[in-house]
Length: 162
Image: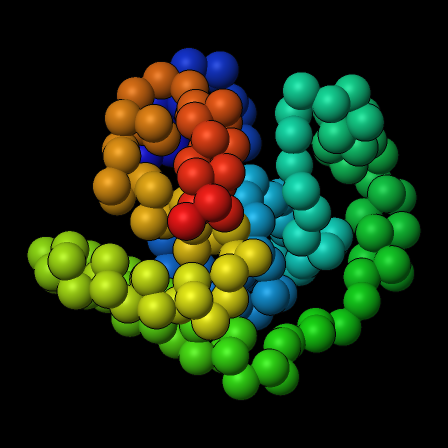
């Protein structure tokens, strides 16, 4: 899924896709896109962060990370321990989200949607769940060219009013 965008910009770095949301669960991430910086040794050098390459600060930080060998040391020093949620509703929502991913993978789309909707009831502010539901129901808004963020805002407003 990432390959067309990766090739379009002639990216010279490796991109990993967390299709099982392992990092999302590990770091209790609830929104995408997010960036995770991993050095050549496989060490996490920066806590996951919201990434927007349209922002100059993001580009500057990434350029510094790539060009300044001492920057990794600074980032590693500032990395904080994991804080997994202990909230039973969030834990159940994550489990249902994972089950939905597995069901979708084996062709059980309707069952996956049921699990994701239950997960969303448990954790309504989880953007990963929202976007997964929307992406499966409306792939054209996610995979045909640019992601339609305006449409996503409209969807959120519609859901709030229901």
